[in-house]
Length: 397
Image 1 (cartoon, one colour):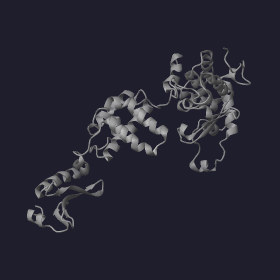
Image 2 (tube, helix red, strand yellow):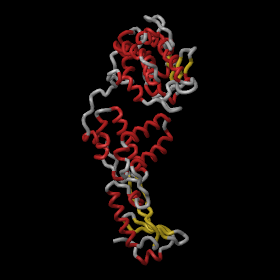
Image 3 (cartoon, helix red, strand yellow):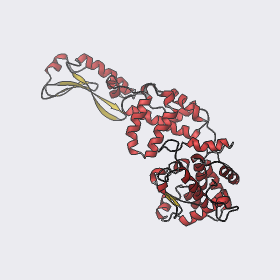
Image 4 (cartoon, one colour):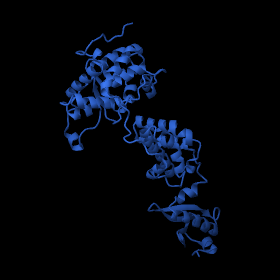
């Protein structure tokens, strides 16, 4: 039985008057009265306004509402969100992705923000987009991930993280009260992923023959971008986003800005003869004032699938990213006198411990240049000084 009575409530003076079990009547100096419920949520005290007296809630109605919210709080649920659910417009998953992206991306790089939205839009929104965000549970997450879980393991793991980020964001906004599914529990409902999860790579001994076949075909932005990626051991996204202003032909350097890099740190690539030859050919397909390998629409970058198509057309199962592994294997086997750190830096990987990085003032540019020159002569001797059958850089018209 509560401590307050209808008469005590009507005659209550300025101050706070407890009814028990966390329910209080708050009276302002002006005489305005309102109900407040005090509960614990995630280890913190929360004062939740229930409404005014007597316009919104009588004593009996305040006790009834407080009892309902206390029960939810004891179950670990968000009592405030439950109180507000009738006031809040619950978005669909598609809408929640847009809202989460708009807010969370304020602290991300442009590249990470774009990847977050694009991956969810392409792979998850078609499955969950029209479903209310508060109705999505673990089984929905499993069903949405199942189609890519074994086919594209690396992408699937990123999608899982991003999907759970959207659900967590929705919970913080009061759009859902159910707990966010546990990533470890989700694995129980998904097939075992292939071991390793590495990108399929072409054995480095096969790369020169493949490269030579590409040189025999007509130049297209996609094919030239693929050959440039091989010659520089760069990531597909870095190549597809490369611009002429990043290239220093005389200095034989590709100066990649931080926003282009996966690590978010600017990086200079030393250009071998093969890479420079590919750039020479690319000039005929662009205006030399924007993207080096432009897409079909003005100002648009090539899609990753455009580069992959050249591999599929040749009947190859390797991936574009896999050529980075081909380069690394070649460096380990054919250039054993070159320190492993040099090859890792050529791939724009972080090397050494934090302490070692603090004392490493050089980017080992000269050693990287020698290594990349060797790689160029290996994969494309016809384009390289000192290689066999040196040809003119320009293609015969």
